[in-house]
Amino acid sequence: MAAGIPTSVLLSGIAYYVHPSLKGVLEHAHPPCVLRPATVISAGGNLSEQKTVDEIKGFLARDDVYSEDFASTIVIQMPAGVALDSHINLASWQQYNLKNSHLDYSLALRGENLLPSRPYFLYNDGIYEAWRLYPDDLDAFEVAVVLQDRYGPARWDQDTSNNQAAASWLSPARFSPLKLLDQEGLWKSIAVPSRLYAQKSRKHPLAGARISVKDNFKLAGIKTTMTNRAFTQLYPAEIETAEYVETLLRLGAIIVGKSKMCSFAASENPGDWIDSHSPVNPRGDQYQSPGSSTAGGGASLAGYSWLDYSIGTDSERTDS
Image (cartoon, one colour):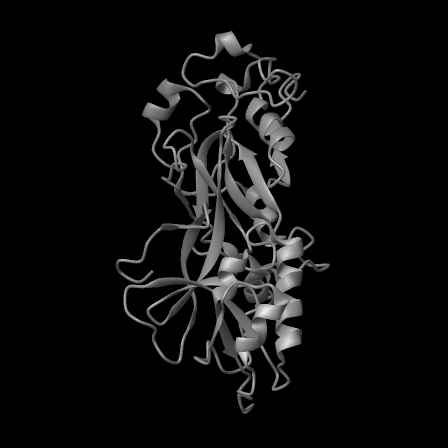
């Protein structure tokens, strides 16, 4: 990541995380040290105002990360050998009910590996993914995580000639804890990527799926706490990722955090939780028991519309 780039930013009251993995480079750098939301549009020489606006409105309709703030700058990228047709007049965009936008003719990439048309952040000449930050106000997560170097389906497809090569490609699945709080400073922030980044396929049926895992699964770079203070103090961060989690990553999943569990996966009532606060049950008056050992997974999946799956374990009567 470029030195000095902000980790998070607020756009129209919504918090975003700037993913540190560089995704592309602009042909012409923008003003230094200015972070700008932008939409990258891939065009094959046939670009029009209406086509671009229709694409943006499609983003708004199906993605919880994308907003009109990202339409404030449009970055056009062209395949190698294709000239840029600059006849578009964005002065007429007011009729499309979009925020004031300006067309940026800096080219993101040229060649075969074009970025998908999606929301990004621009910083100097770099292009970075935009992730939305949600507050964990149900206190369901032990830790929020981000994969240090995310392996998207497009890169995975480049190395599927044999299973051995593919396994080697994904072996450095190492995570970092996300040390961000919400705007009020009360709750952990959980970062989720735009749903527009991933394309499901037979090889990647979980592409873009936002998944939490119970805190008895190993994630390289992250401590496994078992929601127990003594266990947390005794062992360092993990050096490997659980094979099951590696499988989820190979299928395209995005691991967003580790959910709370009863200490050592034993069944505990909320009043029995000592080393960590019990997750909040989102049902009813929010003072009912959140369940047994996979309490964090159950609470988060029931209460967070932005989370797709939560992985738990069955030690006795763990899920409810």
